[in-house]
Amino acid sequence: MQTAYARMVYDRHQQRLQRREGGEVTRATTIKHWLKDACRKLIAFMFTQVGVCGLVVAYNIMGAFAFRAIEGDSGDATPEQVAQDLREMLVARLWNVTLRLNVLEEDQWRKEVVGALEEYQGSVVPLVKTKGYRGVHPKEAWSFSASLMYSLSVYTTIGYGNMTPRTEWGKITTILYAIVGMPLMLLYMSNVGEILAKAFKFLYFRACRCDIGSLGYYRSASGTIRPVTAAPSRGNGGKQTSPGEKPRPRTIPITWCLLVIAVYVFCGGLVFSQWERWSLLDACYFAYISLSTIGFGDLVPGRTVAGLDDAQLVESQQIICTVYLLVGSALVAMCFNLMQEETIENLKSFWRNLGCLRRRAVEDPEVELGDHIRGNGG
Image 1 (cartoon, rainbow, N blue to C red):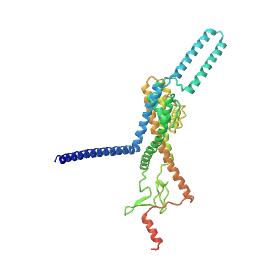
Image 2: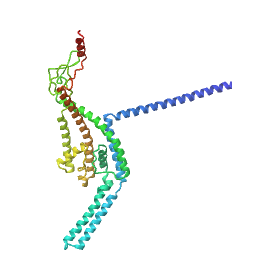
Image 3: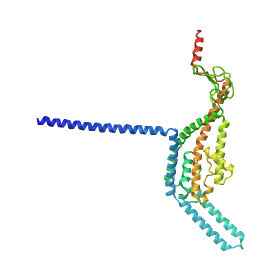
């Protein structure tokens, strides 16, 4: 009797343990599936237009903090100290020459002063080329806004060259940052450029009133859309479409794309000419060279106003410049895509007129069925 009771208690205990273990396994499996779904949704969102934009902005800010920490806080200030010592030595040497020769021996004074200046120049130039001398302490040079501009110039391949890493970790970080950032920038330009292209097409054809009727189509009684051969199509350059031929797809003229780029560059030039005290031509030149990712580096924002006392104004201007270039890159990519579509359609029309390409037939099931019946004689 006791043995049977003990066996019954043992069986109940084992059942409880199995239920508990099963619940833990079920709970762990549920959490695992939930984490997988969350990661899948997060990755899918990251590759949407909004997610790509947020990812690029976050990547830029992350790079600014990283380069500021590496180069600004732990950067090497030796070139600045060496240059300051050279300046002090030059001033002392010129003073000694002046005291020794005075103004009675002007030719000899000029000769020794010129020699001292040439020697100083020969010492400073290698310091600038090899050590990246900028004339200010790394903490001042690598401000947050300047680091933001440097991060942008790395993954957009602009590469102004006015700021370069000195430390070994800074150089390694720049390599890794560019490896990840350049494909991300291409993805950003592709996705955002596609959105802007659709929006620009909608606004352009809405302004031109290019509705379905003006595009050479009409809706039949059965609800299907059929081509109209009598009415000219605005999307086809005003030409009539022959029966059974597809009208030309709607594209944006190249002149309008160039006009958009010109207006964006001109607006940026107006702003930069006021901020940096450049001429309007130089400001527009800087805007286009930056948007086209050429980036010579002869004109860099923040260089002229670096001597101003209002450091917050300088940083805000550099941040706005970063946003301007980031938005402009997507806008230029949009215009290039639209110009590519227009060029391809023009080439197709040219070769089609020469007879090298066949006319495109309308994909209409009723027309194909009628042709099939007539071909079979019945």
